[in-house]
Image 1 (cartoon, rainbow, N blue to C red):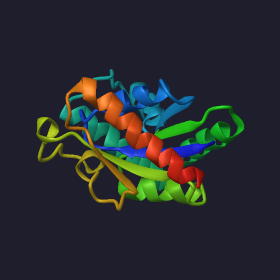
Image 2: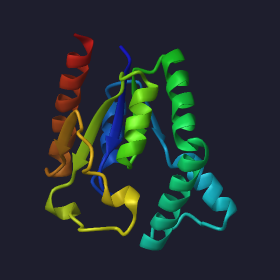
Image 3: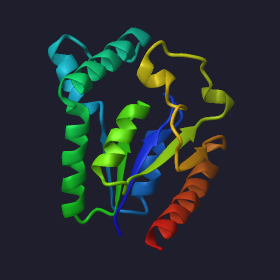
Length: 171
């Protein structure tokens, strides 16, 4: 079984936590379209901060590299090919921008599924001030997971949710 899931949601909704839960059940790889951009940003003086200003810088830098040579999608397509050759079962791909999600799904010939994670009221924020974070709801996702339970209940709920996606993909 091989399943690729583009996972998205606003900052703080628990995407990484859900991926860790999945890794307890499935052999999981977790990659992000921002990883190579962070490497470029570090060369420009970014020091890992998560301020609104830094988030906008990363978003703008990603947009520039996407427009110039599709760098983020090329990076992810290489990760996807490596995943297909590995013994991993699940690949989570973190992508924020709807157009970048479309490009990656196309690069997988439509094999990748898409998942939006919402965090309930505790994670609601009107805007971050950058296109990457502010547009996460602007895509027709295959699945939506409402991450609005206490953490101890979330793991059970997400694994059951994920098992359903896996079963559907296996049909």
